[in-house]
Image (cartoon, one colour):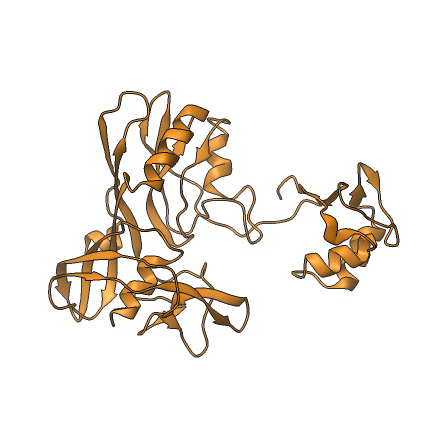
Length: 295
């Protein structure tokens, strides 16, 4: 059981004229109006620090908060390894199955929560999907965060992944340039996928080995769209083995899973960037997990 969490929001002009219950039901549709009514009646919702009633009016500039009671989080692997640490940066190896940051019912069972038990100042510089393993980088200072963020914006950070895909791509080296944007998803409303009018995206792929109509590939991504590797390899006709969401063509299947569902094999293998203090080139690697090393 975790310690619960308080979600806060500063209300904007759209809140004017609404009640507490009407705002919560309209704004936060992950829960129904009856559910919000129960939460408000239980005293879990406050307005400017005072316990709120369902009919209390709200207006722009007020702070609305929901104190979620403690809940049992799904069991996940909580261990991680430190790959690099200095006064500016921390790089760790995230296990497959551990969420990077709080989301979707996960709070303390996340990599961010676990690493902050050692270093409370850490800020993640990127994210990995729950089922993706490998190297994740954190900044330890404001200066390091600004520097790495600037490097990311101008393409100064090199990212390389390993993935297990269906079929053996030919040729052995190729580039995928398929735009990525939102498409309809029956359970979420929309997810990112391959679409003609999406944002530009580029993935550079190299086949490393193959066996039994499967291949281990290296992927470098100069761009960083959501689920880019999964979408691009599926768009190229080689979806990740076990991917519950994306099928050939780079779109959700007829009965798609959720983006966070496991099953696929994807690993953040290498990260290279300019060090925020020394200016030298910093190259980091995370060893492959057994299921990819054996491939």
